[in-house]
Every structure is written in C-alpha cells, then in structure tokens.
Image (cartoon, rainbow, N blue to C red):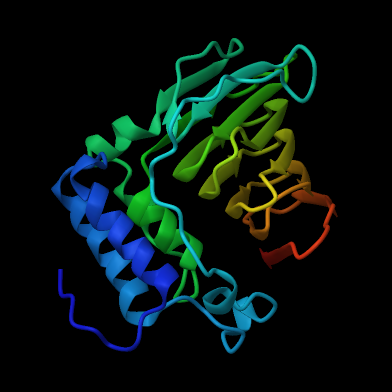
Length: 292
C-alpha cells in the first residue's frame, strides 16, 4: 500500500487506517478481497472524510463531526436480547461475529465471512460512487454478517429479526438478502448497544425484492448515546414488488442512514416511514436516493 501523505490527516481518519492495518491479517478474504480492502482504505487515507462541500454529505460534515474512532477491542461478548416483536426468529451478530441460529422454513442462511474467505463476496465490496464513504469503510473492514435467501412463493408466518449487538469498539457487518418472486414476510434489522464502551459500527444491507414479492423491512437503530452508526440499505425492486420500509433512529451520537432504492420493474411500490428520536448533541442524517 502506498502510504505517502496527500494532505493533513485527521485523528479519526488516521484511526480508521491504523485499525485496518492492525487487523488486516485477521480479516476474512482471499488475495483479491484483501487487495480490494487495501484500495478502499487507501482512498479514505488519501481523500479524507467528506465535508459539507460534498453535496451528498451537505448535512453531515463528517470530517469535523467524527472526532475519534474506537479500536476493535470490544471486551466481553454481550448476550442476545428478546426480539422487538415477540415470537420472532432471531439471527444474531455479536461484536461483529455472526452466530448460529434457526431460521423459518423457506429461508436459506449462510455466513458472509465464508463468502469473503472464498472470494465470492468481492462484487459486494465495490462502492456505489465517489461519495460512498460508508461503502469504503464497510468494505475495508467488514468481517461477517448473514447471506439470506427466501425462496419463490415462500410466505413467512414468523417475523425474522437480524439482531446486531455491540459492546464497544468497532464492528462492520453486511447482509445480502434475496427475496424470491411472489414471496412475502416481515423482517427486523436491529442494532443494539450492549455495553458501556464507545462503539463505531457500519452495516450495509443489500435487499433484492423479486417480482411480485411483498415485504415489510424495519430498521431499528438503538446504539448508545456516545456511539457512531453508519447504516446503508440498498434496495432493488423488481416488477410489481412491494416494500414497506420503516427506519427508526432511537440512539447514537453521530448517525448516518443511507437509503438507496432502485425500481427496475413496472408496478413496483415503495412506502417509506421513519422516526428520529433525538436528544442532547446527537446528530442524525437520513439520506435517500431513488432511481426508477
């Protein structure tokens, strides 16, 4: 990696680079994934974090607001908690590591770390555009997550909750989800603080909703009051697909939630609802793009 300084680097930017260098050898991935990770973190080092002069980040001067980055030393592993909706099936990621769990019939589950190790996930780690800083941070440091596939025509009677718990330090997760044609179900993506240490987490969900499918997807962000949360959900809607997306931010000190929707087929429907519960000096930015 070329480490010649292009400009003065902030403490947070340096901490992201140092954190990558400290754990690069332990991150899952083949040689191609490792090379791509290095390129992504190098772009952060060279270009820095965005300021308000970048239009996509006009309401979040990240270079100023992100003043420190905790390193990946989360300490003890927290226990999973009761689901948001009683009776839900739960898949858990604890301090960045996905745990074994039962899923409803019709759902196939794999670990994202395995796709990284095999090199199959490399196409997932590419950034959307020049301003995709969350994609760069997550792509360079992601360690695990769940790869889910819901079969054609499967109607889930049971809510499926993806529960992401962090007790401190850093965690970076990814969730590719493919919904089959004419399938239906309700999903909860829940991010929880489970300790007293500061956390920085990034999480990217790639949701592909097949033709004629009907899905409810709930994002519940419940980080600690001093935590940083970078969330991104990328949605592709096929013809006649219906998605109800609800985003709730009920925690975090510095929060950026990106919602990117691509409607590729006629007759697709999107309903977006959200609520931000803010207090003190917390900063929450919800930014959406729609391509149709």
